[in-house]
Length: 223
Image 1 (cartoon, helix red, strand yellow):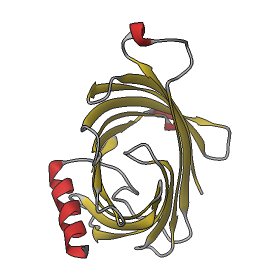
Image 2 (cartoon, helix red, strand yellow; image 1 turned 45 degrees about the vertical axis):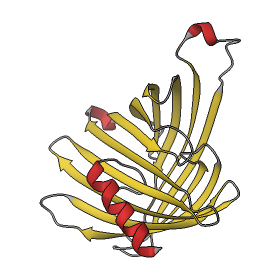
Image 3 (cartoon, rainbow, N blue to C red; image 1 turned 180 degrees about the vertical axis):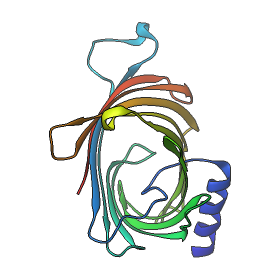
Image 4 (tube, rainbow, N blue to C red; image 1 turned 135 degrees about the vertical axis):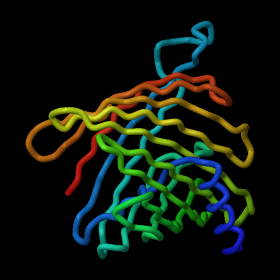
């Protein structure tokens, strides 16, 4: 089973996507926290029965540097299948050089819905002159059922003046029992207050396998 999970993570990374802790390790004693809500409505206005969102997703994400090479994390909220999730993970770098891509592997364990899951992931990141590009992949193996969900994201980020940022993310996934999907999620990030708090505002739009459009609001903080 372990070999199968490792192969799945490698295949996903070659396919191209991004999720998980990212390719840059957290320094020892330093961390990152984010929480977000995504509200969605049908793209076809004729399907609206009210202005209330038809889907609501809440997430909470935490990373903390146990050492300069080992990052611990928690991923809470909704999985690619839509079920509630609680997953803890450890991540360590496979390639951490000044030039070229950063590469990191993560292995998580937790619960999604009623299933115990093992979650391998691989992240690749490139630092750009004024931003970055990341490709994150993961596979969620359900121990009891033997099913596998896949998640793949690609994120392009650009740093602006006054610590502001613009992001463009392509979110893709293949749930074990649902069609594959592809979604666009551009967003804008800006600082609030003097304690390093960042607010992310954005929209989402399903391209294939997803007929929803939505709004996203999130909060980031490094500590």
